[in-house]
Length: 445
Image (cartoon, rainbow, N blue to C red; front, side, top):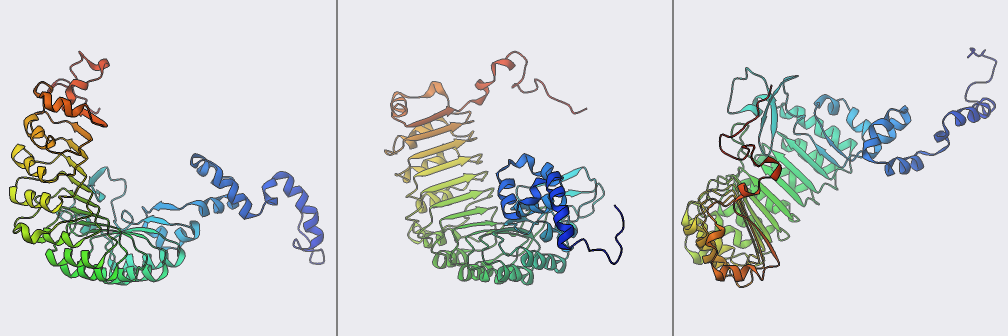
C-alpha cells in the first residue's frame, strides 16, 4: 500500500469505498451481512464452537460476547475495569462469589463447602474464618455491583458475597428484571435494599458457614424481607438465627411462597409452629440440620400446612422424638416423603411418620438404622402409597419381607429396591476384591 497525498481522495470517499468493497467481500463474505443476521447464524452453532469462532476476527469476537448469557467471575479487576460489561453486554446470570475472594495464585489447596469454595495458601492463619480473611472490602464489592448493574440492566440472576446495602440497592434500582438472588455473608442490614427488587422470586440467603464466615441473620432481617419481597416463590435460609416471629412474618406476607429450604439453622425453640402460616407452601426441605426444633410446644399450637405436598430431609440429625413427631404433625398432608443420609432414623423415630396418611411416594436412602419391621409398620398403614424407593439401607433385608409386604409391592406403580448395594457390584469386578473393606485402594502417584 502507498501513502496517499493530501490532494488525493480519502479512504472514506465514495470512489475508494466502491473499489474496496468488492475485494473485501471476496476475502470475507460475512462482511456483507449485518450484525443482526450474523448473530442469528452464530447463535445456531453448538456451544463447543463458540471459542474457535471468537478467534476468527474482532467482529466475531464482539458478536460472540453478545451471545453469552451466563458467567462466573474469577478476576474482580475484570469487572471493576469495565471490560466485563463491554465484552458481555447481554449477561443475564452472573456469579460473583469466587471473584469477591482474593485467593493465592497457583494455590493447589481448595477448601470447599456445599455453598462456597475458596483456594487457600499453606500458611493461612485464621482457620475458622477463611473467607473473611480473603474477602474484598464491602466498598470495593459495591463499586463492582454498580458497574455490573449499569452495564447489564437485563440481569435476572445474581450471586454475590459480602455486599452491603448500598451495592444491593444499585442492583435493585438498575436491574428491574432481577428474579433470582443469592447472598452470602448476608446480615439483617443488607436485606433492607432487597425490598426494591420488585420482581424477585427466588432468594437464597447464607448467613453462617462454619469455618468460612459468619453474619447475623435474625428475625429483624426476615421481617424486613417478608414485608418487601411479597412475590417470593422459593426461599432458602442457610445458617439463619431466626425464630417463630421471623417465620410467621414470611408466611403472612409472602403469600406466593411455594418452596422453603432450611439448612443448618440456628433458630430458637418453637420456630416450627411458624410454618403453619405458610398456607400455600408445597415443598419443605431440611438440609444438614443438627436438629429440627428443640422445643416445638404442644400440638394445638403447631397447626398444619394444608397445601404441603413434599417433605425432604437430607443429612439431618433425627434423634429428638418430640421434634420429629411435631414435624410430622405439621406436615400431615404430604404426599411425597424423602429421607437421605439422616442420622438417628430408626424404627422408634420412623413410626411417627404413620400420622401422614396421604403419602404416595416414599424414598429412603442411607437409612442404616431402619429395619424391615420398622418399614412395614408404617407403609402398611399408608393406603395411598404407590411408589417406593429403598437404597443403601443395610438393615432392611430381603429375607424378612412378609407376605403382606410382598402383596403391597405387587400393586406399586414404581418400586426401586436396593437396600444392600454391595450385592450390585459389577460382574467385571467380581473376584478382584473391590467392594470389600480393606480390599483394594488406589494411590495417587
